[in-house]
Image (cartoon, rainbow, N blue to C red; front, side):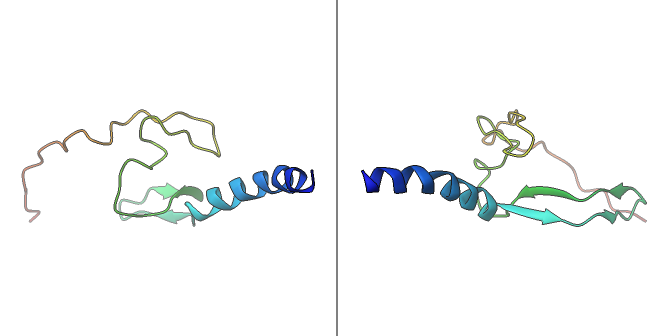
Length: 84
């Protein structure tokens, strides 16, 4: 009984820790183009695309918004254009 109670109390704490470790706070900043980006939370950078909040079937834990991007779709071709 004590183990069951302990597990029930620890489960929400473990979920919070897992969410906190997978996110990064970003400070508000102004881009080179002069656009202000307000402070926000994003997924921590890593080598995979499948665990980003914007990828299907993931859900952003802060907004509840479901991801729509296909993490395995090929990137569109962008030819190099030098800026003079």
